[in-house]
Length: 390
Length: 163
Image (cartoon, rainbow over the protein chains, first blue to last red):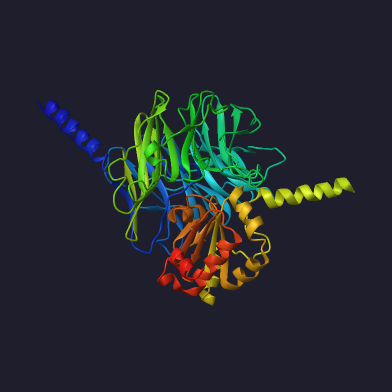
């Protein structure tokens, strides 16, 4: 009888938690005059591992921009109080990744990039990642028990994309296999990298300006081997006045994978140049070495206005969810779509992802087959980072 | 010699036509410096949203901003600011909030480029002008903004009354 009661109580609590988590939970809220930023390269501001969710952001509550993280247990309905991760000077654009319960947070400060192992209970030493001026860090988990980083580092002439493997230690981490992704000689500005690691190797994508307009480039390194030459990912159009310009632009690419061989890329694309950026995506069956034809993600109701801040997540079983923000209902709301049978479904909003004020900057991640979402909510001068399991 | 000349011509063609940057020879500033200067000097702002590789930005720069009169009066009448709609460069809004140039484009609903804003010295938008503009367009918009009649009249009403 006691066991039955316990089972019933457990089931009831689980059901309530699951239901509650569809409604937004506040990760961190700040008053008027304090500004939160939720904007890492590759949109890697949330990580989930062994039942713990970690979310990073930047705000100026201390008088200057600093990096904060909050954690919560998978079924809990509250996050820990914000934990300050950065130490000195203004700090920007934090990223987070986790593997086997080990969370690594990185950020930019003093024109360099820094890493730190952080848990709800302790923080490791701050370690320099970059060797020269660097920015736009992104972090991901790998199928092995490690993490991987990509970032832009100045080579004396311009920024180029670098990657490294991060090996978690007891309270710290070790950086290995630091390397440049693209060693071609016509580099002319590489920005906003994103990467994913599968059983086949490492795929990296970034914004590239060498062709005179911003394009999405990718490069693939088979497991244990060097990066292959870059490829151009996005299609583009030239202006009708061909003698001017170099074609339409694309930006802010994000990669996600099932960690086996399937990779999906998503980005903002200006090919329909009179109605702002659209959300486009492309699928890869070979770990990101090659991608199939571009797919428009948003439905026709979102076609006549610009989309912003796209992101994508793929589960271990190949479920794919994309999110972005646009103002089709008058104010910026979070919209999302699922890709089923190689088709993007109609756009939808999740509870709390729409309404008064601006709901923007979504982040998605799958843990198993559970989708976790976070975003920035701003209304009447106040802002909050929100979280749910839509 | 011919080869050298050809190289120089090709270089300048690519420089001029390939990059949608602010027009050459104009004192365009970054957002922060421009906003600060406009506030200090109490001078109106001409904000140019461009995109790297944008065809109509290149057309505007070459066909319109090459005009000698525009070249003279725009720097006199305005603090000139250029913003790259795809850039992650950090800027500070008058509110104290720090965002990127791309975010400024998102907040101001920049759908296409070029897009020109005429603003009060405090950043309040007077006029929003999307797309390629001729020299006459720029002269007309300047007359409208400098007249201060925008408090009472739309630009179409102004141009009807002051052709």
